[in-house]
Figure (cartoon, rainbow, N blue to C red):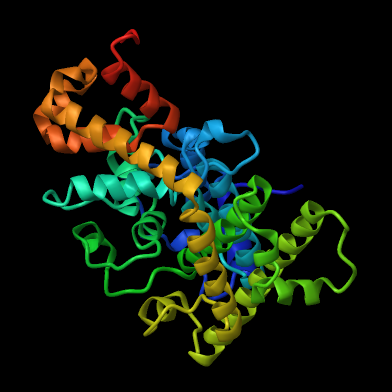
Length: 384
């Protein structure tokens, strides 16, 4: 008879995880004290709280590159998040890291993203330049610590310290006020470091896939990329005649190539730096997760190619300008006319001020809700 209580799960971690992994039994805990769960570890609880949050559900209608109404098959912020989590779990398992913690950070890493992708984020940051700016990692932490309202005893989701550290230290510097409680002088856990690279692998390759499918990317230019040539050699057999089928085969191979290199290169850094404990990871002079030099260069070339040929494509630029206009006008209407906000925000305006309230409101919007609000507030023929 199997005893599947929490202690059993923690003992499994002790037996199977590497010494440098984050063990749930050694978490630094939650901000608000709670009883432990009968059969779930602390990082499992984090993962499930994130999945059941409203902010997570809204990711379905937030832009990755293509606005939601552009087509049903393009990635959204939600499908991107799921792909990051899948890659993170695969890498974590190979490195004997804590998959539950890695998945929790992956699922939460974009909860604070604005509508319209990075265009919305940049516009909010510009509008808030005299108020501390805007950055989606900071907003993601704010979502899980304050904005989610699911519990009567506290605001936020009351996630563990390690999950919240992974959110605020995701792909950025640690010199912000929000990081002061997360030891900015320390490296994030290896689980969190893996998320940074898994995020990059996911968005580079699904944007490449969507770019080819949409016709924004020139196939003849794509096949000249070094990473494409490396993947074609690794594939090792004739490609399908159809370009779309060939692209799917190669993109899948690129992901496999990058994931394999990430695992091997991280193992090498762990060994080279004599990492034997979780504490060693935290005090290491640099991050341990990353690509080898050759693969890293090929991956950077892919990023540059996407930036020039897809993100700056005239069709994307046109949609970006419209998105920027929507965020800009909504911000000015709400801040200059607070009475246009729903009444439920009156208390928040009184406690936090109009700027912070409007920022939270806009950042939480889906693309379609932002467009609907814009029409209601600017088109005299649309009912409010």
